[in-house]
Length: 537
Image 1 (spheres, rainbow, N blue to C red):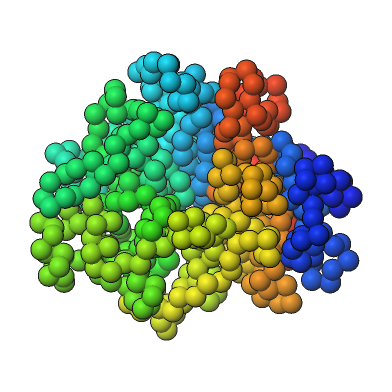
Image 2 (cartoon, rainbow, N blue to C red):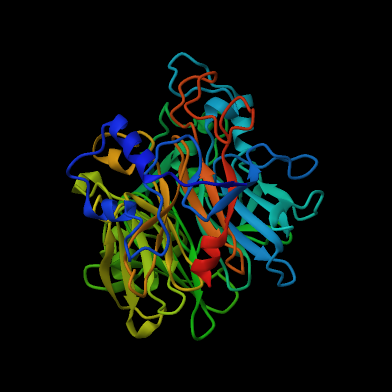
């Protein structure tokens, strides 16, 4: 365990050396550095650029699982872990199954393939290694003596990978197949009211390219590039087999791909039970100028069928993507399955609002308001991103109208940039992870923010709307997958892709988690401590 805080004196010294302290230091940043401020619920961490996980005073962290750790006799914990979700066993807050997404790999370390090297030949053996490291992990964990650990030899410990055969729900056939090989690019997700996991397939195009519909013909929307994973060179799987929401039973590992919720770069699948028992799922298409979506199931305890909507945030309305209700969609698509397979085209045809890279979504536990992160869109001069708030009419998530407004914008005034994953705690306060891309970290206008961080944002009381940094990640990393144990005494957090900028296997830019391994490792950590207990009390 580690308990860490960077002093203001050390921070200013470091910033001066880095050349980022100036007379123009924002008032919000200055406030966060002032331990005498009456607004602070705790002394927040200043921006840092250390190759470690740094925490504000009163928080402790411990590694739960790291990349390549054995989880059973034949499988290891995957790479680049992202979304986490704890499912208690027998209603125990201290024992359960943790689902963890594995979004991608750093091929340089996973298989030895350097996609930046023009002369290196790709091999199928390298691809096979990478396919086995993505997907997701189900791990049985238990808290004992105030420390979480893997329950070894548990039958619940298992993997879904890029090679796992997964059926399409409802016996659907997609491009001549009733199943897909593998789940890939798993970013964020959700938990259903019946305690199954929803894992979202995001940037699938990096593996097998993407297809769009031109008239009635399929055409490459984005052909696989040499800098991508190039799995398509060895496995000719249709791109349409990916980009879905996958439902996983945590007790059995049985999974199915839902075609009902559309196909696009799903960042998340955030669920809530409607007053009539049906399930509502909010999701976002993580790409610049793409849309927000809502799915309403046709009956309780099932996502197999229902109606998909796209958001018109300008006019505050949800537009149905049901072919039977739209002459325009009937003109361009031959079936509902075709609409769900090429959802982006349908969404823009009917008037879905292009947004600045919509990513994660969280629902306030008491107001029911929906918060969505818009990570940013340089093409529209939105460099730091924002958080969008959607208020369903009458508080009903099945309503077809809503009010949309900006909740917070990124920048030096608020102290965060490029919001990504978010989660609410039991008191209705927001926790936010930032995702400044690795190629922009510590550069240009992003320099003042330094490493990607975890923030706490109260939504009530005198501190409402103030942004407090709780943690900062190691070099090149993204903090993501923030979630809580049922008693809210533990935060589960993913440390993803430390050392992503490494150009040589023997010269990594990060050595995190500093445990003698020859290259950096992604990992899931637990965060506890008296400050967290006080915030939750």
